[in-house]
Image 1: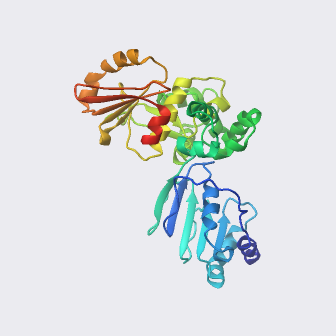
Image 2: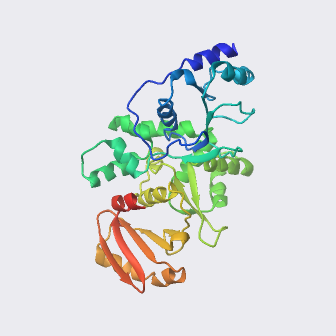
Image 3: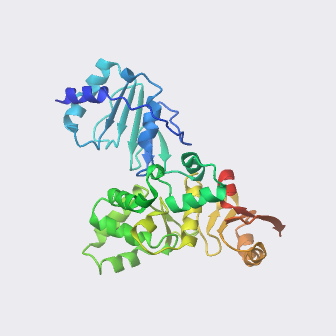
Length: 358
C-alpha cells in the first residue's frame, strides 16, 4: 500500500500555470522553509519543480489525509534509491523520522526547526512590492496601496471576487486556528492590533468569557506566535514591558471584527515591511519603530500637513538624541519633505516610496 501511494505521488506533476516570482527563492540544495500560513509556499515549490524533469522529483505533503504516513516512512528511503530521485520535497514535515539520502531536499514547516547541513529561510505572505506584481494593475500607486490596505497580504486573495473577500478571510482565519479556543484568542488579540498588550491582562478578560486554563491560554498564544500569525514587538530596553501585537495579515481584524482603526492598520502595514526584511526592531514611547543597528526611527503618520508634522517631530528631538538617531522616517500617505536639524536627517515619505527603498 505504501509503495502504491509513493507511485501515485511520484506520478504527480503540477500544472504549468503562470507562477509569479516571489522575492524569496530556493537557491540551496538542502533547505528548510519556515513559512507562515497561507503565504503561498506550495506555489513556490511548484515553481521550483518546473526546473526538473518529472521523473527526477518526489513531492509529499504530510498534511494530505490520504497518506498512510507510517508506510510512507518505512518505504521512502528504498523508493528514492530505486527511482534515482534527485529532488525530494517534504511539505509540512514533522521531523518524526530521519531524512533519507537525496541530492536535494526541501522541507517546509510552520514551526522553526534547525537541521544540520540545512539552510533555514523564512517565507511570508506578500509584501507591498510583491502585491504590486500580483495585482497586475496599471492604476496609480495610490490606488494600488488602497487595494493592498483593504485586501491584505495573502496571495490567494487576488483571485477572490470583491463581494466574497470578507467571507474568504474569515474562512482563512478559522482554518489557521487549531481549535475554537484559539480562534477566540486570535479574535480577541486582533482587536488589539498595533497596541502594547499584557498577555496576563488578556487572559484575565478571556477566562471570564470562556472556560480556559492559564496554561492552555499561553500554549495557544505561543502556537500563534510560532506559526507567525500573531507577531510581538518588544519595547526597547524593557523586555518585560507590554509587547505590541501585530498580525501577519493586517486585514484579519476587519474579517473577524466590526471594529476598524485605519491608523492602527497602517502601523501594522509599516511593521510588516520591516519584519519581512529581518530587521532588528523595537518600539519606544516616542517612536513607533526603532532600528538600533541603523540608528533609525520610524513614525507612522498617515495624514497630517507637513507643517504640523514638523512641529510634532521636533517635540521628540530629545528622545532621538538620547538614542543617537541619525535618520527619522515619517511614513505618510502622500506627503513629502526632507530637512535636517541638530545633525538628524528627517524625511517625510509616502509609504510606497519608502517600501521600495527599505
